[in-house]
Length: 427
Image 1 (cartoon, rainbow, N blue to C red):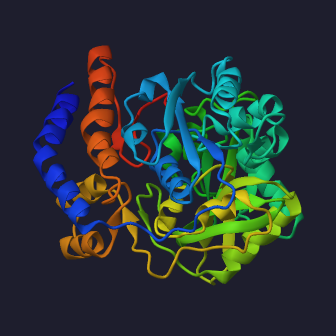
Image 2 (cartoon, rainbow, N blue to C red; image 1 turned 180 degrees about the vertical axis):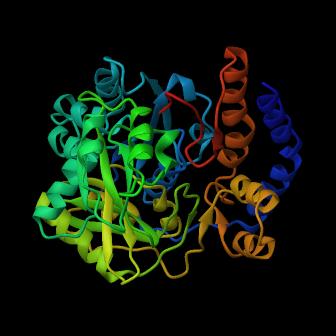
């Protein structure tokens, strides 16, 4: 409770600074160049609490499309609903609830939606895929079908599919019983980690190493994870090296939006890097799938320069914020055969200022941190649309903190990018 009250107090204290920052942005009047569509559509975007949903809403709006944003009632105070880019906002059930698909259909019919672009949380991507059965007769859905999304979301099945194409992935085993850990013949000198196949919002950053030299520790650790047939895990080789993440928007197996950047366990900074071998890997994989949707991949580059795909997340990546000044995002999302786009060379690295300030105060190398702040731009704040920035920090997050305070519920951290409190059993 003390932590929650302290966070609320901290956000209240920073309100004047945020008002000043928004005012400066308005005076500067930054507005990206646009290419207006010759055939404006009504575009439905889900995941309204997340910055990536706001970024897509802005991209579609600037191209002349009408944007409808939806989110669950828990996040009804999302600052993004007040964006100039959002024409209508609706609350729908949580994606895990039975009425979710029907609620989406009601919005599609009521608003005359032409295209649905899910901005899915890990818990929602499969449910958005299943909703296609209801939505396909009424609008286009830029998302994979249920079978494809389930395969991609399953780390072991994804690895199997990639390996069958001759694409490099770390060594792995699907684990449904702790006995498999006892019996696994760990190769000498190699380390492995256990990752839950279902989304694990809190434990996903636990990289406890399992090796041939620590058999008792391996089993002890695995026994505490609740591994079972109904809750499978993947035993994956740990490869030391530089991590990368990608966002891809694909139409009919053709990559049309692509961004790649250096990554980390808790990613809150995005800057485009050119890694041809990663781009080739992604293009080959999505071409084989032949899917339409948004696919994000995580890679590791080993000491020899070889890249290995760690996992695929079949949903929008926050790296889409790197396209904040690109005039062709909407067209690349909506038009078959559009030339592949990457972030403009003029794009500044994106970040979330509250994360940056926290790291400035708690981590070393302050000179580098300040350099990052002044060289880049906040992913939410823009001069032509400043209200979401103010309300994410002074309505959306405070409302969630108050909710948790009243429920006497804990949280592990505030994620301003996703617009939520990270907590056990969360989305």
